[in-house]
Image (cartoon, rainbow, N blue to C red; front, side, top):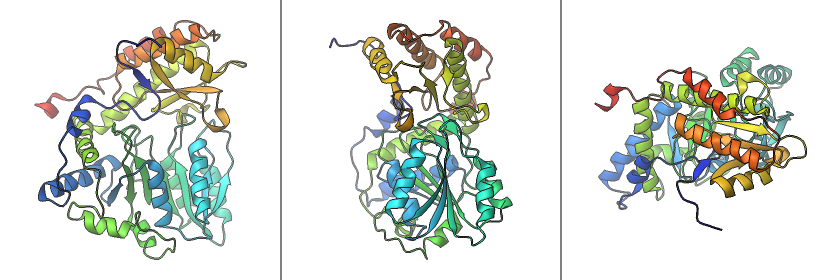
Length: 400
């Protein structure tokens, strides 16, 4: 294969492109992870994470993928034989179900069609029907990366309260944190699970649990075994800026820089930018005559757009042709929608011109792969972006 010139366009829904500032921040010599210098780094990132989760409660950081954070949420709060309520919103909700089952947890899995988020009314009805209060936790994926659907977390919290149910509330924000409005404390989430490689603009390798007082209390009485994932040990040692085992020091340098970038832009501006880029992408899809997988406009993701292929056309063949001709990576369909959709990521370090470049590659790829479509998607996205605010500009005072 001939070498392709120019920068690769990475527009999968994560890992997202890593800003040059973050790459430079990680390019540091290793330091003693028991030193005062490291303690300052540790305290800075542990405190800085609270602002992104919008919490005053502890946030713990693991050297792991998001799957590790899922496991930590389970083993610190539940016991074998417990029952939890989950909603089938897509591939990643299904994976969380499988992890819970491996620990002997019974999962009441609300079936879904992979075209929308979790339904608050259905969750409320299930909780009302649970007269014995056997359901110990409600577990929801905020942004389902496989489908491009978001779940209405604030409304689900209201549903739990309306049912008067004491279940813990656990939310996966692996692909939504720092990209979609999220409020751990205000929405009374007990455990928020996340990862480093999406909105935080870092390489894979860090995962997070934000923990409420209620969840921390549960961790003192539940019976699932844990060592590496134990919150009690983590929180105790984190108080001084350290970790109970060798930390991923250079990723923490990158995290410090990423948190600074988010603070400079302002979280509300970050969320506004993601919403604007997502709306432009959906305008392009509509102009092409194709269909977005997520059916409910109120639940369409600011992070990615999953696009359905016309019948008899294979999404993976299209992605292969587009990669080879135009050096752009698009997300594949997963699970039930494998080969039926491709996914356009527009998260993390992404602005209007970066998105328009990606959409140009998508549109040229549709033509090259012989996928039936109308031209003009990029122009429709441009028109959508002309109606905008300044949400992606860093305020002058923030950098003065």
